[in-house]
Structure formats: structure tokens, C-alpha cells
Image (cartoon, rainbow over all chains, first blue to last red):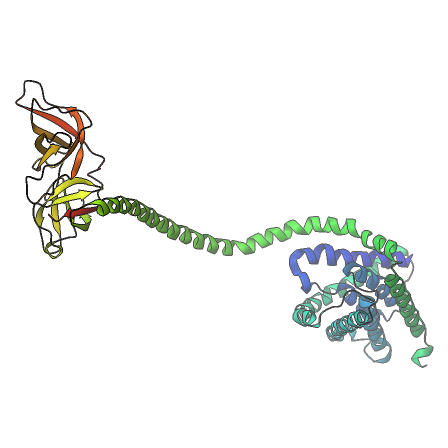
Length: 176
Length: 266
């Protein structure tokens, strides 16, 4: 049952991304809502369920942008795992939210670098007809970064709200 | 416990395997039905959200663009004014060009030396039915010389200044030019008739004067060249028992709208 809730959350994020933020003319400045969601779950709740969001949401994003599978999904997995390891290994459990922006910044950076390396590597191997241009990524880097940092805490609040509502709806404690 | 022995690593590895399989299937083109399904699944919701956000975006975009639109409107208004001015200038040049072409045709066929002049003032306050032209003593203009426009005699030089001259039009009541019918050499005098045109009078009652006959200068006055076209005979104005015959003159010249003239330097 909880995976249906997760699916609903992923679809809601896609709708926010492509139905609200993109049509508002933000173009490349659309924040990486799914990345923030994955990061938030790994970092705030220390739950391994972030893998589900990373793989399913990432594949959805890959298909939506016509990129090879793993472009977004791989970046989400790496960022989520990083956040989860931080949660496990470092003594940040009580103060994660204070470092949330820093993690969001690093995760965005990792995602862009991964996108460039992954798509270009597959392009060179002739496995993908599409590769993201480094100049294009550099050109939009600050707009993407700022939009993601601005959206970081709204997403954080949204995730908390969704988790509490899910718990009420399912009438059983979720791992989240 | 080392990371590779944890549940997280197992899931991580499983995810990588899933992605690798997905990539392989995508490269082979086996994922197309699933891709289509996944892309279409959230589309109704995205379309519904777009239906809400697009008007909002349009509203704010319009609100933000108003200042720009106002500025563009002011620029365009200024540009329209400028273009209208240019258009008016072009119209004037076109009209001048047409007149000059007519004048040029006459100037090329004339045997009399001509001085081209521009009309500075078409209605000087001190003399009615007169022109002030931009030719004077320096151009060899002398009093009494014929003034021609579009191949027709329009008046005579009344006064010559250093740089300008005043020409009395044929329509002036004080104007008198010796003339004749070109076909029969019947002589007479062309007089102005108080702004309503010119008449050809002092013609013998016995003379054969027909409507449409051409009236030209007679050349009695040494300053006015011979055979300059004045106009053609119109209606007969005199009565049979008058001493002389008098007819109106039809001319294509609009005496109120003369821009360029030639002075025949006889």
C-alpha cells in the first residue's frame, strides 16, 4: 500500500514540475523537485525507501526528457545514498535540517556532473543518441542551483506533510 | 559492519542492476510500450495543472509587459510621426518631379534661352495675381520678359531685384500681352480679368475666331518672345454689335499653384 502512496507522491512531484513550474516560464530554472524529495527522505528519515523514489522517479524523468535510463535515476541514487550515509555515519541526526541547504547544493552539483558524464559516456559508446552539452549545463547552472535552493525547504515541508498524512491514512506506522 | 554487507548496499546494487537492465532494454528498443505508458500516465494531471497555470502566467506576463508595451507604443508613435513626415516630403518630391518633368520637356524644345526659377511666393501681399521668383539681375532677368510654366505663357516680369523678381500673371487686371491666333495671325491683346482668368480681346469683329484656336504671343513687344503658347480660344464674350470681339482663354495652367517657371530671356 505504501508504494501506491509513494507513486502518488512521485506523480504529484511530476505534476508540480511539468504542470506548474515549467509552464510558469521558469524553463531551466525549474528546481529538481524529485532530487530534493530523495535527499529529504534519505537525510531526514534515514529511510531506505529513498531508493524507490530515486529509481522510479528517476526513470520517469529520464523517459520524460528522452535521456538514457540512469541519467536522472543514477544521480538520484547517488545523492540519496550520500544523504542516507550522512544520516547513518555522522552525528547530524538532530540537526540535519540545518545542513539541508548544503546537502541540496552538493546534491545538485553531483546531479549535473553525473548527467554530463553519464550522457556523454553513453553517447561516445553509441548507446544514446543524446548527450547534454557541458556549455549548456554551465550556462544554466546558477539558475538551477538557486531555484533548487529556494525550493528546498518547501519540498522539505511537503514531504513532512505527506509523511504525516500517509501515516494517518494507512493507520499503521510507515518506515518513513 | 562494513557497508557492502548492509541491506542498503544490497538495495543499491539491485537498483544499479535494474537501471542497467532498463538501459539495455532501452538501447534495444524493447522499452517503448512501457515508456509510452509511463509518459502518458501523469499527462491528464499535468494537462489539468497547465490549464490552471497558463492563464496565471499569461496574466502576470501581461502585467510585467505593460511597461514595455507602453514604451514600445511611444517609440512606434514617434516612428509613425517620423514616417508620416517622410511620406509628406516624398509626396512633395513626387509632385515637384512631375512638374519639373513637364518643364524639362518645354525647356528642351524651346529655341529661346530660358532661365529656370523657383517660385518663392505665389501670392505676394503687395500685388495680387503675381509671383515672386528666385531669379534676379544676377541671372540676367530684365523687366518685361515672358514668364513661362509648363510650356504656356503665365505672365511677364514686372520688377527685377538683385536676387529676386516679381512676375505679373496673365490673370492680373493690369496685365496686357500682345497676342495672335496661331492659324490666322489675327492679332489682339490678352488681358487679365480680375482673378477669373484671361481674355483675348481687341480682335476685329470680322476676324474668324473659332473655339479651340490656339493663342500665342505676337512678338510685337521686343522683350516677349514670339509664338509662346498662351492658351486656346474658349467662349465668345463680346456681342455682335461691340466694337471688338472678345473671347475667353482656356489654359491648363492653375495660376494659384505654380512652383517652377522659366523666364524667356529675349
